Every structure is written in structure tokens, then in C-alpha cells.
Length: 67
Image 1 (cartoon, rainbow, N blue to C red):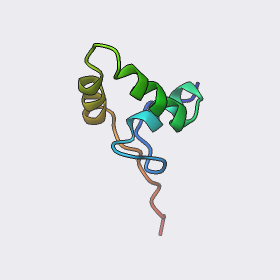
Image 2 (image 1 turned 180 degrees about the vertical axis):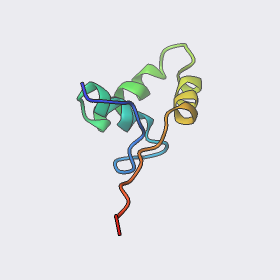
Image 3 (image 1 turned 30 degrees about the horizontal axis):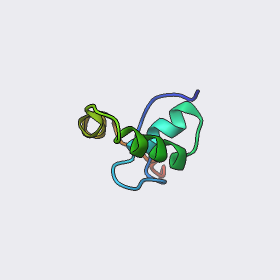
Image 4 (image 1 turned 90 degrees about the vertical axis):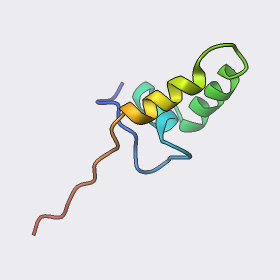
């Protein structure tokens, strides 16, 4: 597993939550998106959890050029 959980700037579709989880757990973003969509068929607060993670997870910072 890699470092901190942050929403990446690349590989996003909507908010970057699935891409962030995929990086964290070492799987592809597509796999994580499929898991999320299948989980939506089950009862539970999936959309609320997605929205909460979108709000709470920080975005990935870019490196600034040193002058």
C-alpha cells in the first residue's frame, strides 16, 4: 500500500475518490469504479460515503518550479 490518501489530479472521472482508493489499495481505478457501481445495488449509504470522501480527502498538490 502506498502513502497518504489524496485525490489525484490525473485519472479522475468525477471527484477522484475511486482513483484515490485504487492507488491506496494497489488496484486500477476502473476496478474500483466497478466495485462502487456494484455496491450501489446493495442497500446502504454508498453515495453519501462517496460525497463525504470527496469533501474530506485533500486534493493532490503539484510541485511548483523553483526559480
